[in-house]
Length: 190
Image (cartoon, rainbow, N blue to C red; front, top):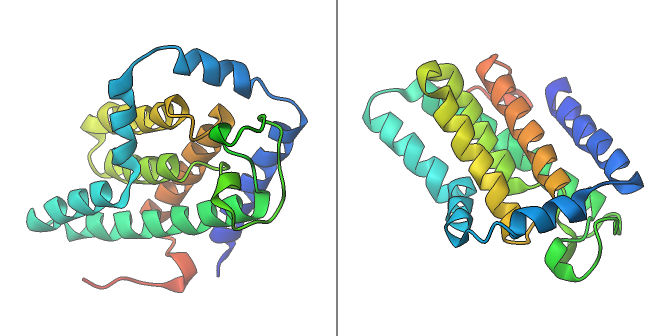
């Protein structure tokens, strides 16, 4: 493992500390859920594997294998860091009945896998790679990724700070991939 992986893990841990101390998470979540926009929750699917696999397949069909490689690296890095954060932090999800300050520590119980948002991390990892490779469309990529995060809050799956942390993890994973820093020393050869 390399220092960039550990840097992402450290950022995730550092973001969790102030969240536990005090946060406006509940008020912001209620405000977003009050928008009453059922269509917003559909954006959540853009943070799932079929979305980024579809994008990668379209790019591969168009011959842009370098971007496909970067997407794979960014998504893998974001997934590892996100999973480590979820298991290690153990923050209660909004739908669990606990408040935003409930942290149980290391657990494999999905009820306590709110921090950080994996859908948002995935969406921002993809958006960051696409924004670097296709900069004229950067506002679209980041706008869609932001909608994924808002959808996760609207659905009651995450607190706003979970989404913010997921966005940071995803963005850093995308930047690391684009900067040519392979995860775990893996070099892809397509």
